[in-house]
Length: 100
Image 1 (tube, rainbow, N blue to C red):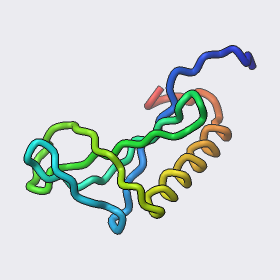
Image 2: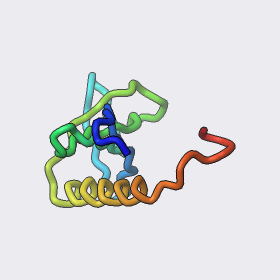
Image 3: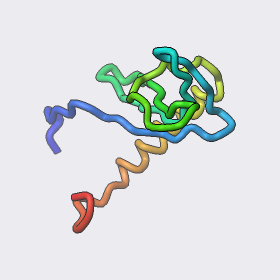
Image 4: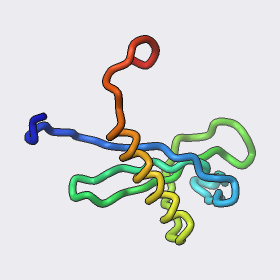
């Protein structure tokens, strides 16, 4: 494997457990945040944004929200990054059929 291979992005989506979900407002509309997008930055740190659905229903806009700095959400992000790393490390190469 070549060590000079450039990988431009590593990102995962994580479902926020019901007990850790929160509500935030953007552009006058309340959203329940249900998903985290976690990115691995070139320096090895993680960056995270939250996404969700309008409280009143419907699709709403695809808007990102900051993630509150709580120990529970920090642990969720860390655990998800570790799990994703293990899954990537155990990959079995290109599959056949759907998703290829």
